[in-house]
Length: 151
Image (cartoon, rainbow, N blue to C red; front, side, top):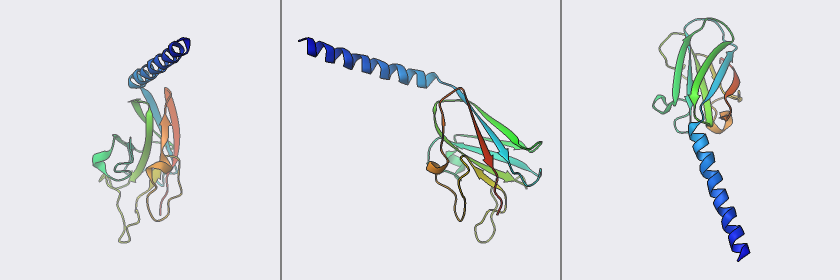
């Protein structure tokens, strides 16, 4: 009888802890500060796309969780995403030199404007996967550095 009560109390405590964790996660609001370095020049703007899942990463504009474009006034350039729920995110950056908010490519499909990704994966012939760029936002302030690449 005592064993059943103890197991029942442990189960109840575990369920209570899970419910508390979910409610804490739901109310959590963090900040992701993105530091962008290695810009070739100060022409145009930098567009930073924040993805909350692998769906559409890195190029589908319809699947972007949040997006910001900023004029290049200094390097490294800082862009901040505020009030983010705790979770996994990936960042894709475009140095939009001509201001059309699109990553322009040459006839071979290679970018003619600079690109960068969270966690700075090696980029060769295709864009990295979400899993190669994912960062965890779990505290009040998360800072990442992105080094731009030009082909």
